[in-house]
Image 1: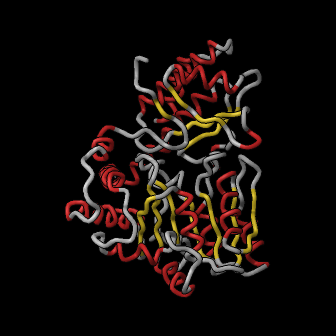
Image 2 (image 1 turned 45 degrees about the vertical axis):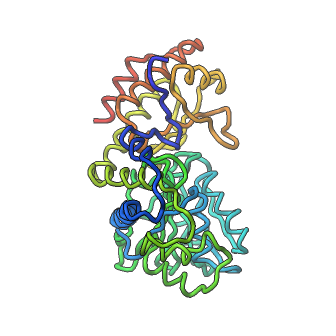
Image 3 (image 1 turned 120 degrees about the vertical axis):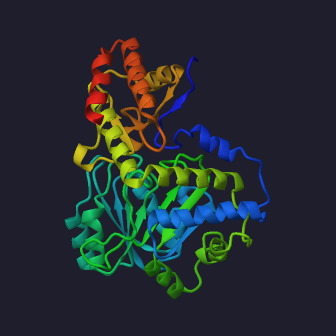
Length: 385
């Protein structure tokens, strides 16, 4: 293979050289003052990133752990929540809630469609709910939730807003200081993982609580968790030299460097870059007859689920593409075999996406499906401007 394999799944995302170098530094003792300084900086930078008036937690684990931490620390057994689901990962909150005896109502969109604020308000007006979960960008469908419409409706009825940002954070706005029509209407919790738009390998759960969410945790008293109880982690986040469970030392190195890169690029510039790449890749791949599942007005900027045209064998296509050095993901659930998913987030570069467009076209041509590669490249460039 002439070029390095390009990972364009919706996470993990490519890990650039400087982050790899940070991770590959010698492993220190987790109480070593040098590591404590790095960990403390990562915590402080994460607070600045989310603009929270509360606390952040960096814990060894996946985004699923962060989802569990969000629920178990704010919602008690027998209390009710609404789950806004735009696909497979929104649905995951159903099993998580059930595991802790939480009563659940689900508002589920057809795949590729978006739940409306009106649907959510109708549900909120009919009963009392402790919290509402929103998957900001669903990894299975590429649909984005409209926070500007959803957050004020939820806060109007006094529920907590829990945002699953696993496939959105650091690429789509999740400002916890932002007000949505009223000074008290803010996002209460954002959860994410290291392996998506931050561009760090998997293994770090990241979650931010505002003061309102911290107050709710205090009111709950004891919760049915140990590792996932934020009260066991709070002393470490306040003083990383203390011990509860061993942190992922080398991942903290990498995340500390990655979040510095985010700050250096600037959030607005980073959001605009992701928007540009999303426009470009969708236009280019659509020219091959692979149409996005989500329409542009409801689409995430981090990944796209593309539906195959008639006659394309999913396994054969993705296998041929992988032989050329580009790895993309198959679709989930009822779309398996009928679509593929391409990630375009994190530190993925423009030349990476151009290369992917070209090799996708070559693979299609080798499967006797006509693809105009130069046209696709031109569309990528035109739409990302």
